[in-house]
Length: 305
Image 1 (cartoon, helix red, strand yellow):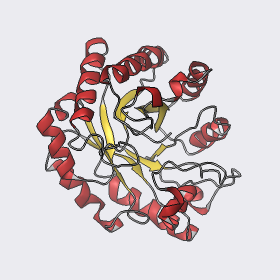
Image 2: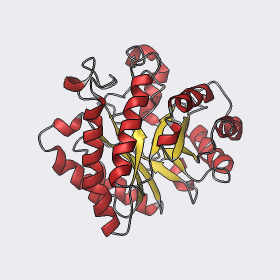
Image 3: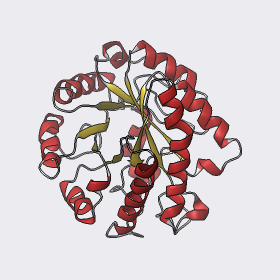
Image 4: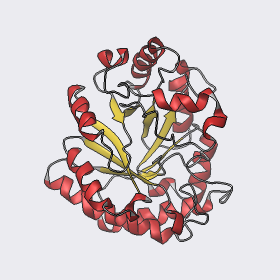
């Protein structure tokens, strides 16, 4: 997947790219480079949040939709969006009215911030509404965010309860114990789980993914982390652990020294730098996965760290 939530200021600074032309150029150049070497590798446009058909139309006018195989959307109607959870099929139809490309739900989730019973309802209703109408649904997420970590969002505590909901999206609590929703995880649902650099929760997550008999997993590796000491060793460990799953690998987060501004949301000064990272990731992980009979899927988009 190429980038995550490009129409969300917390993941792409559209103040620096107000018409998204630089984002479109980056995706198109990356797609051309990947297709020249890996023509069968499925490419996914980074999941959009909010679900905005006008944004997809704009991407179509730039030629971005011709550069990808799948359109991905994110929805959190019980926590952040201004629409009812029962509107999920209508939201999918709004995107299908723009493009014939397959639509995936690469993040759909409900926090247990107010009550675990709300998350149980949201999990079951989301699966009921979406599994019959889209090929893939990735529940966000498996693990609660530890209280001492920082949630990836632009305004942090100034968002009030909206910020703290980020910490309760998991099916497992910070201590690894299961919430009520974990006991009712629906068959056929995928999982989206982000891992921080050298994340100590990796083994716990893999164990629970196997318990849930998850087939489809979505995660990411950070372009910004690529420049850390030991980055390749960590990425190798992460990807080896995910070999049993059909993995959508999201590439995102601009290194400060390569951005138009020193921030992970910044458009890169040179889109060719992101192309280089995407080609490295494909060379490194797509062929290895094919040898192990499990092909990862690179999704073009921008994701949280």
